[in-house]
Amino acid sequence: MPPLRRRVVSTALGAALAVVLQSPAARSATPGDDSLTISAIGVELGACPNVDRDELQKLLALEFQTLGVQPNGESERVVVACSAERARLTLEPDGASSDVELSGTTPSAWPRLLALAVSELVIETRARVRVATLPASPVAKRTAVASIPATPRAIPLRLFAGAEGRWLPHASSNLWGPELGVEMDRFFPLTLEVRLHASFGSTSTDVARVHWTAEGGAVTLRWDLRLGRVTVGAGPGFSVDALQLSPSVKIASASGQSLSGPWGGPDVDARGLLALGGALLVYARVDAG
Image 1: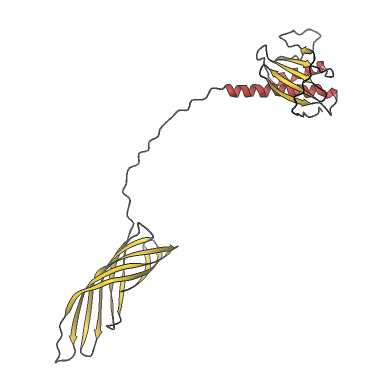
Image 2: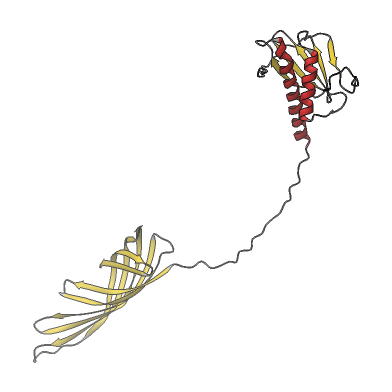
C-alpha cells in the first residue's frame, strides 16, 4: 500500500537540467512502450535523480486516464523540482504550486507520491479557474406590489350589565338597582368606562319613610392590570344622578313634600374582573365619593 501524501510549504527549489516525460503530442506509442501513456500534459523533472521516471510515467498515465484529464493547450506542463527533503510542483502557465514531503519515505514510494500530487494539482487548479471564469448569472428583478385593502381598525368595546348597590352612611340607607355600561381598552392598560344606572332604596324615621330614587351615570378612567383571566384596576371617575326623595308620613298631623335635584361628584373607582370564557365574566366594583 503506498504511503499517504504529506505536504509542507517550502520555497526551496532544485535547479538542474530537466528531463521531460514525453506526451503523445511529443511522441507516439511504439510496440515496446507501456499501454498507459500520459495523455494530458507534460511533466518536467528537475534534479530528481532518485525518482523512477518509468514508474512515474505509468502512474501519471493511470491517474489522468482515471480522472479523465484532457489536454488544455500545448503550453500546459508540470515542473517538478526536487531537493533533499521535498519536491516543489508548479503548474505552468497558471503558476499554481504545491509541495510534496519526501523525507521519511523510501525512494521507491516517490513516484506514487509525485503522481498523486501532480494529478491533484492539475484537477484543483482547473476547478478554480473554471469557477473564476464562469459568467455571472443574470438575476431577474421583480417588484411585487401587494394590494392590501385598507380596513378601519376596530375599537375594542365591551358591553356589560350588572347590579349596583350603594351605601349611604349618613342617611342609614342602601340603594340597589341595575346598571348597564360599556368600556373601551384600545389604549390598554388605560380603560375608559361609561355606565348608566338606576338605584332605589328607603330610609325610615319616626316621622316618615323616605323613598330614594337615583338615576344617572358615571365615567371612569381606570388603569388596569391583567393577570391571566383576572383583571384588576383603579382610577378616578365622576358620577351624576337625578335624585328624588319621596316621604311617606307616619304621623297624621304631619305633612311631607317630595324633593328632587342633581346629586353627584368625583369619586375613586376600583374594580376586579374574572373572565369565565367566551362572553361570560364576573366583576365587582367599589367606588367612594
